[in-house]
Image 1: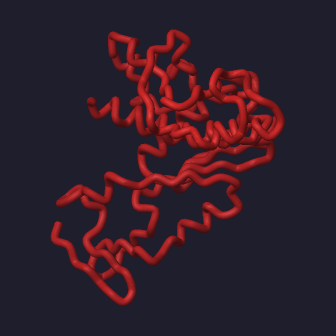
Image 2: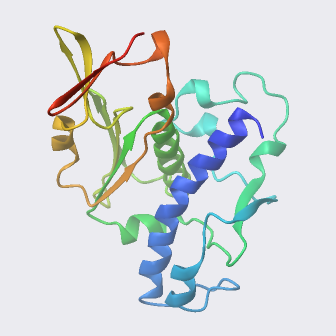
Length: 231
């Protein structure tokens, strides 16, 4: 499996979490007309992460070139990728069928709520995918876009639903001190930005494995210990 396929797989797994929440919320009121989903118990017991990719001619959910929130570098077709077959696959859990994503239903059920993705570029991909999927389903919905100091938010105004991205690769703080850049494992001052959210989706992984010049810190600080690393 190539790097791009792995990233796509991880992006979908993150979004599956949201879809499961929606499905469980829906199950409180009515049964979704999908084979294999007949009760809340079955929905909650489904292992979303055990399954396979299957061809689905109805995919993709959105055209990247028509989504105003996606970064140009993530639009493979724009930069000349000749094939489109890779866009035609959906994730199929072994033990259940996922309901098809419905952007209008998403907005109705999350009316007045605030959602935030917190993490690195994988969180960026997940955030872009979700807002583009909603935008495609509810293309006439008025939106507001704000980007400042690592925080990006798209608000679907008519529903008062905000979907935000906070870029912080390590989740915890990095500060510049006399010894250089210090990774403080016991400090999350940026967490003030996350307060008052109704749903938080965290991601942090590959930056922790970086070495040398690509490592974002030189020292790890955890009271009362201080660890020094050579770059």
